[in-house]
Image (tube, rainbow, N blue to C red):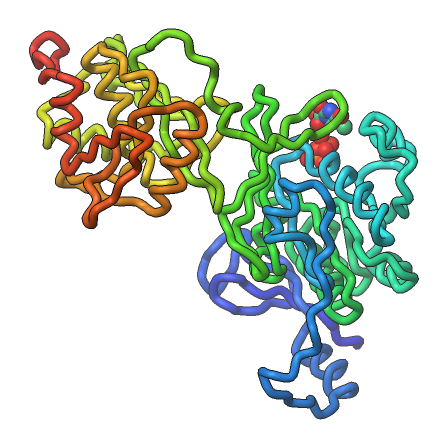
Length: 458
Ligand code: TYD
Ligand code: MG
């Protein structure tokens, strides 16, 4: 009998089985069996070709190859200053968010400088050409191919492209595995082959991956640890802004963002995003507050809005768009415990304008100011920005890059800033700085009075 060269390994307990099953008999976990090559077949292959490895010192590296700048500034910055030869990038995002559009645009500009291949496993060549026509890049010398076979791709890449886009990894397969394209094992094996090739021949490979909700198709997460750089392309449905965010980068800073706008001619760069996330405000509105944030290395002003309204429900709603709902609950609890302000039986809605997602704790003070303004029914000063982290005792803590935040605010015409009380002397003569040590000081400033608890049943 021919011994099978693959078996199924449970990803949580490590037991292995000759056949696939929905449930692991070793640890009872579901859907954890993944096809892998057996140790026997693996060793046979590896020991046959095994040879002595060469050790070298940390010092004697050959001078690094220059990075390849695409010319799309937002993209280059997120990559940490252009594409590193021989590196592998993963661009993940929801289906339909614009990954193929961005990659075709990137491939088009690169191909003007270096040979670049765009390999689509999802669309027919004519569909890609149609898209290229819409993006007005039809004349750029991109090498277009449509295939899903990794072996074919690697053989063809020998011929010279310095950059290759693989769209998408979920459609690719290697012949040695029986599993269907899109399964964890195929996605991993395909990516592994691509990565090995990239390192060996110094070709930059950009892998596109769909984020999937169900477990049926493997998402880009299973590849994050293998690649050099992980970029996620995000955006709210209904908004035309798209944000490219670096979550891992072996060659540059993470948390850097690039902002794009989806238009009928593809993605346009937005080089001054603060202006975009700050709608033109003519009158003062309660609950609206400007947060002076930092995304990666770049300061970014964003409007945060809140609305507090009497609730008709037994359990009042807490709805958040663009921020962490756990963090909102914490801020509400701090306001209640430290300032005696309660939202009781009232619905609280919080929204980050423009479809941006903020993850910085520095937004705490701006969120509190917005909530206090809603509670007190008093607008905040129109020319003021806010930033600061809030602790559970209500203290306001300093945050990073204060100067960059203030400079950006000043540049956009803001005159006042509510900031954490600095530990060492700190001045910015152009702006009126209002240092705060405790959240109660902000409540006093805004004259937010404790809510009459009876009136709202709190
Ligand atoms: P696409 O790049 O195909 O998404 P993905 O590869 O992430 O699945 O983007 C598809 C969406 O983008 C589609 O809904 C239409 C829109 N779009 C535009 O608005 N303008 C354009 O010029 C192009 C090419 C696409
Ligand atoms: Mg696509």
